[in-house]
Amino acid sequence: MDLIKLSAVETATAIEAGETTCEAVTRALLERIDAREEQVGAWEYLDPDAAIAAAKILDGGPSKGLIHGVPVGVKDIIDTRDMPTTHGSPIHKDNRPCTDAPCVALVRGAGGLVLGKTVTSEFAAQRPGKTKNPHNPAHSPAGSSSGSAAAVTDYMVAVAFGTQTGGSIVRPGAFCGCIGYKPTYGDYNPLGVHDNTRSVDTLGMMSRTMADQALMRAVLTHAPYRPIETAAIADLRIGVCQTPNWHLADDATQECLLSAARDLETAGAVVADFDLPDGFDLAIEGFDAVSGYEISRTLAYEWLNFPELLSDNMRNNRVPNGLKVTPAAYQAGLAKLGDYRRQYAGSLQGWDVLITPSAPAEAPADLTTIGEPPFNRIWTGLHGPAINLPLYTGPQELPIGLQVVGHAGQDDRFLDAADAVYQVLR
View 1: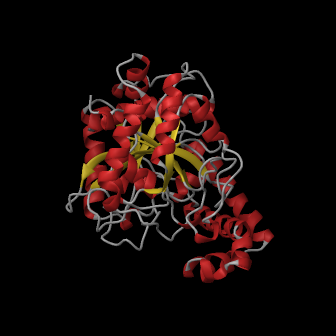
View 2: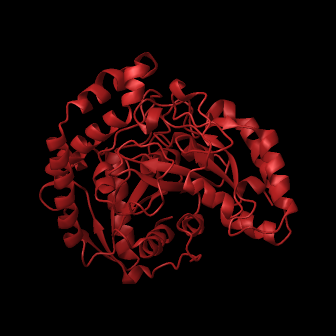
């Protein structure tokens, strides 16, 4: 077996069958990281000796659960009791939480091994970390879950946590070329994950296979494991949603979406255009008001006490501009999002999933940006599940993803349908 290329499902199965060990897998991944980390820069914290010691303990005991012996990457805004959590900021370089976030506790409780902490943008916002695109180091890996997407894509770990406020799971998945799943808002407990915009922040997962998303979903919801039951493509009604931001997608991205629609229809799905309800601009205004209000209050301590250690944009724009959003404007923003959420839920009836761009284009040759979220913010604000499927390659030989969006609160059904789309198009 090529241990670094095993999925989480394959790793757990092989360890349970006695075909390999957690220590062997961990050593193989650490060797891969040693060979590639200088170029990719996916990891904020890694202690190889501690990881191997933890692997030996897991190998020496009984199986603890679904992912016994599976190494997992943890985004560096998520608390870990035995590793620093720096939030991508020098302000917190010495921060050592005393407890695990619930998501980390659930991973350990199911036998997972926390391999290390992956790079995040500053406070899961706009200033990028050190990570580079694993396909071309001159290009952005996106953000804020840059390290997790790059590490999974580059075979440094099979699965890794991401978080999304605007597009911080789906867009890094698109730029780097891995599956990035943002579940229904609140499905994965966000306690111990640094807030950006609490009203929409969603914890999710990066992987290379759809099967791993179902496995990790069982772990993180502490629900019985339900493998993906791929839907019959002919049973699906799929909406093609260009969104009012269609003009922001480049020609290659537009062609990928339209090509996907043609291929899905040829395969037997019912495919038709889907228009979002009126009020899109008001919903985005609401999103911006909510985001500005919440992130500025979240970062009050850092802004007031360590302004010189914040990025220029955070210090001079994001926080002071957000502090100008009044409580009344904030409540109005929440109301706008809530109203649009209800309109959208009604308009989605009769459709199984939508397909839409994951990002406006391939990853730019610019390491100072994490990319833009015109095809992401609305879906995060609507609280339903969304996933990037790595399906296409653009003119710069970099990945272009397809985003699939579903009904809030119906994630099992959503993953079944998304897998059907993936199987047809890949």
